[in-house]
Image (cartoon, rainbow, N blue to C red; front, side, top):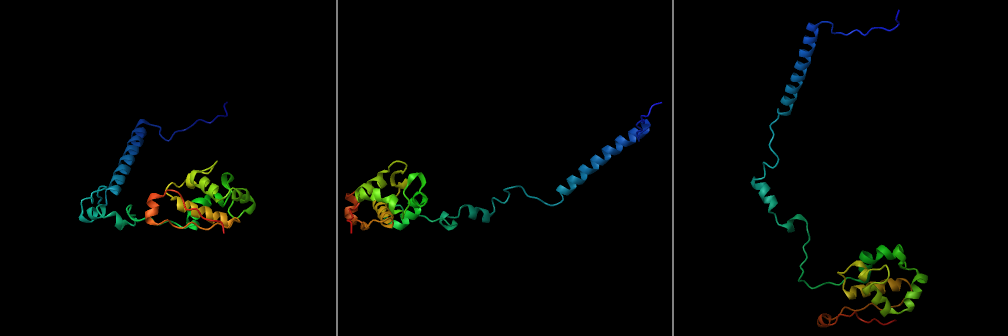
Length: 185
């Protein structure tokens, strides 16, 4: 005698098999029909079908100035930034944290050896770059006067007493490429 139980199927005759297979296919076909009916029951339009409406055309050809962009006139006279503004936008990334060996602004000990080299050397290093510092702090759009103002701002915060360079006269600015020479107060 065997303790194993025999498996008994629900389908015992060929007639039951035909009914089960036919029922399975009818359920599948009915499910597909219901799914297609559900998907197509609401009227849909294709993507971009409203593209030729007058409102859509007007939105596409709307001037850029009306979309929140600020346009800058390249021929307008340049307004030079103050030293604090240049420092905030360009120099602070490294000189606030001391990244890549940059002396921290306000750290008199870190700046003392640099200040001993003099203003002209500091300005030359700021404009041309030195060691890990790129030329003009990595912002080639800066004017030499703006870099000079940033150097004076950082140096004065770190123990120097440099005078801020004045903006050159319009005629002198076109002919002179060098920065103004501030004097120590």
